[in-house]
Length: 193
Image 1 (cartoon, rainbow, N blue to C red):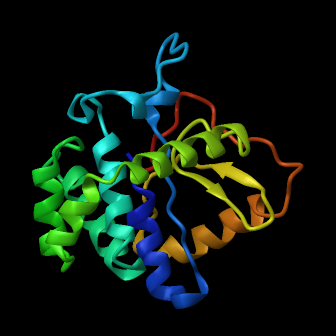
Image 2 (tube, rainbow, N blue to C red; image 1 turned 30 degrees about the vertical axis):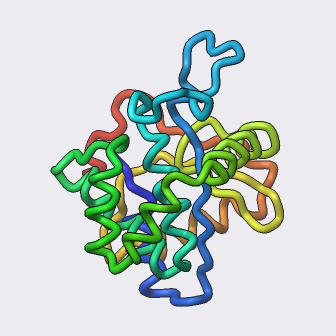
């Protein structure tokens, strides 16, 4: 339905360096676990048995090679996942292939995939997102002033991407008194696409 990275990539092309995105980790598997109790996805013994923990670790490994390297890797991974190929998010071979195609140092990337410190980053990001910002889904935007907002949308038409982003910022980055905007169900998304 929605891929924030694709939308924001279009926006960033128009805005340039004035838009500084800091992608952080959030586990839908963790937040959606029924009766999770003390279970934590990042404490699993075999990460290939999780839905997307390895993808988060791979993203952190890509970040170690710089922001530009991460952005190329991240957008390529999401394109592979949501662009029709449905690439799995728990297969390091997929991530190594994408890392190579994105120009990353694959030897360093492969080494970093095994660094347990990256799992700690993923866990800490998720805990901060839920406990500090109240995140329950993706994408949740955290603004510099601490305000947070989740958005559910289709990717806006390219010629409306920037204006849509500006309206979103205007509505949610400063106005803490706006708690929720929701279209009645149904008819949404009738006519949306």
